[in-house]
Image (cartoon, one colour):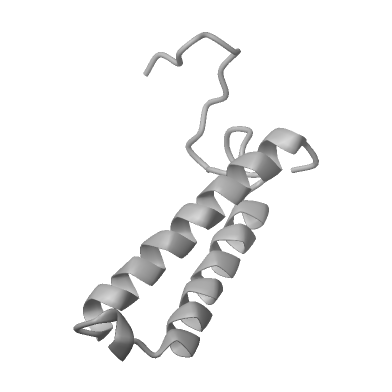
Length: 82
């Protein structure tokens, strides 16, 4: 958890979580971008992002190294074998 790689991967997951949850809220909650309750949409996406970061931190010492429980780190230029 105390490596730059961990936080880089966690930031990537947090950004994806934010974008996915905001996209889902926009599609489900409004017919046009002008109808969106942006404060509520951004707050919900922010909460999902916070939960993604907390999940990565909570799972940092479980399983393989990395923010994901099922991750297998690989050396640069090599691919993991299943």
